[in-house]
Length: 175
Image (cartoon, rainbow, N blue to C red; front, side, top):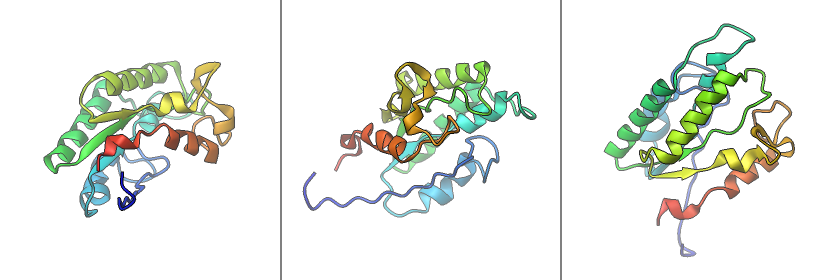
């Protein structure tokens, strides 16, 4: 990149958001037009969605809202297709660990692992960022590293966000 390269980052992330259903706000599928296509000059999207769908789908603490691996993959494919139609690249981000989070469950971990495997090897994305490894506890890769976490075993603190930023290969974004 030359010194004259100019970048902007639009963070349209919403805590508690979900890919398929209403969470803290409308689903990622429903807000794609507003959050991506209405922003002038968007060239690339980093898609990090699904952990709240998984958590709410398999929680043992409150009513479950079932979700399947196939439904999450179909939603990702829809986002990829809609972005590609507009010439926008989509980088898939591996979901971070969530063992020990309030809504974690073994069945949910199976879906998270399956989705991460598909993101990594499915060939649908234009690139992959491994946020899972970047934030995992080296002694237990299914758990968030304690010094990267805000105490809920799900969300990164400033050090966790820095580790995630460090996992991004800027070369994926081109010129």
